Length: 289
Image 1: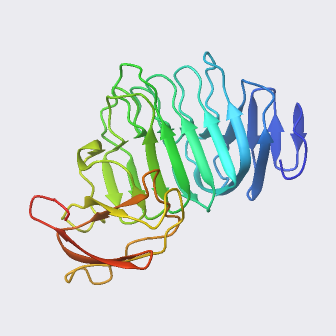
Image 2 (image 1 turned 30 degrees about the horizontal axis):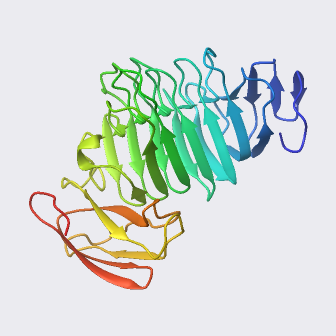
């Protein structure tokens, strides 16, 4: 924690009670591997910036605290550096965003695994998620089969979806694990205006728009990159009628098969990807060719 080894007690901008490592000041950087399988990184309301760098928090099956949680009323930017792993136990989220707001930024990676009935990022069962904005980073959200309809990112199983929003402006999102039910992304409102979001239109609820002020939906188009599992060089030129609309391309990485999945409105879109040019047409039924 900011170069200090964490032990029970407190330091500059933090305190630890053998379960909760509470972040109490801005600009903290948390790194390392926890030796305690029952630890929760807790962000106090009022903390606006936090960086995790090569951090691993893996909670045991019956642990009832999330690896990372925002306190109610928090509004924080989480910067990803290096490779980070947050694995929830029991019925917890990997990263709790409920009654709080989070922006995910930075060029690092995040592997985040949900507990039973919970989202990987968002809320536990029967609870709506808060406000989530993803601007950058590579996120692998993981849910194993638990017989529930929890989302990978958003609200937990049984939530009514009456609140919470998810906006994606860049980065790369993968949705993994053995779970078959539930949406990849689910909240009261969803927006995709950037990034490679590797899921289907039907797995986003409600159907995504590019912006709350635009009534049209966006649809997935899967395009081949130069190589698998690699950063891509991409530019997206939107169709006429979308003046001022830009598609965020920061943090985009191809999938295991060498593809990216961008989300586009109806019309003709020019995409420059790894030295090749594509004219992507999205028809009235949302089919991209």
